[in-house]
Length: 165
Image (cartoon, rainbow, N blue to C red; front, side):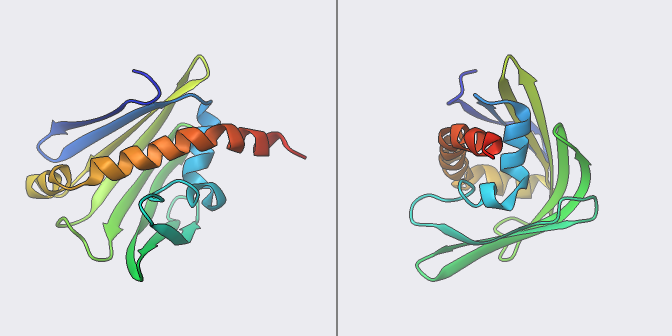
């Protein structure tokens, strides 16, 4: 798998797996996922969307909250961290304010490094097959690809910032 490849797979009747390889060490990719000042630079930022709210309380039981805005319309989501193993694994719930699928999702993200490259796999467990199917039929893939492509572009800058005094 090359760094620009995004793969989305239905792994069960209630789960999808999203996989992407980044040309960066896993600690950097993990930080890009968990530090608000980094997240707000890439997650959902495309096609005129901004991210005015990005709050992350990175601890088990801690909450996160994201709000994206485009043309005066907000889209918000959030959840609770259930498990955190830095820099290897995150498990959190996900709920959209105006949900476009029924119920709550549970995201399990793993960060595996090999030869300086990180494979990020996020498995999302939905409450039903109908919820999983709604997500698979949505434009989610377009948004994920845009966000992950943006993250790939920014990772060298994040690395430089991490070593700056």
